[in-house]
Image 1 (cartoon, helix red, strand yellow):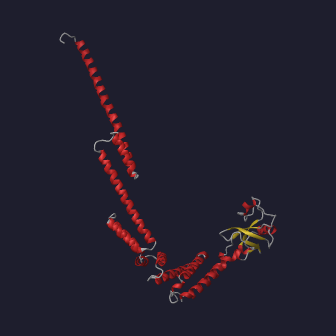
Image 2: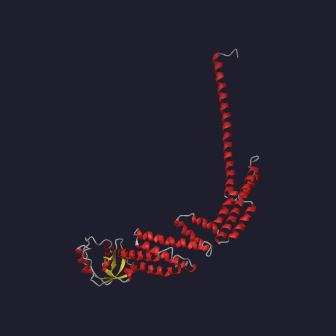
Image 3: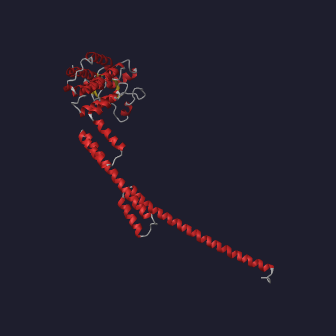
Length: 373
């Protein structure tokens, strides 16, 4: 080396340096490539294991066992993973079967309760306790379900509920314990609530439909429990109630008269002061008094649209403000359609059927209440 010039030394050193760099690059590429391959294998392995996990999650334990067996044959599994997955599949299957068994027994208990078989439900609960599938809290929950359906349980639930819920509980009680020791109290609770609600609705001047529905509910319950010999004569003042019902009906009936859709009617008179004079004149020219028609639409304000099949001509002006929906009929060629107040029409029960319904319900209440005096 001593005989080499300075230039040659530098050249040799440079070449050695280049060769070393190439070696490092090659070695680095080898390790990086190996890491990439390893990562790919790990990802593929994790994917295979996830397929087994998904099968267990979906309770497809046979598929999970099959996959595990295939991976074992192909020597895909890492050391120790086979026993881990075998245990996971085994425990998953055991837990699933346990929950399935619990649910089956609970459904059996609930079914017996629905059939009102309290003793059978208690027998099922004893079996559940002996099997040992349920926790203490779960057993307590099932005991509460049984108690809630017993006579005492329903009574305690009823007396602690709010008024609206009490009547519903009382009705359920009477369905299960028709002749139970609290049957008379339950009937009184239902009927007293019915009458109180009706009185409140009357005092607040509720709609005719609401009061009519109240009266129908009272009659329904009076008829339903009429053979139970429940005495309400000293609790409810039926005469006062009927009087208030009649007063309400006299006051409200005229404002709630409703025609039946497609009910037959007859044009009997014109309310001159209600309509625009021009509209009245046009309608008179088109539909003479006494013409028969049928109701095809009812407005909330009490007006109705009536069609008169026998009328074949018309003299309407389309700029009149009272055509409203009638215009849509005219555009279809139905020119024999006009708007009326109900008071302008006659139609027996077709229109005035609502007026007498509440009176009829009041008479029925008086008749049905006789069984409770």
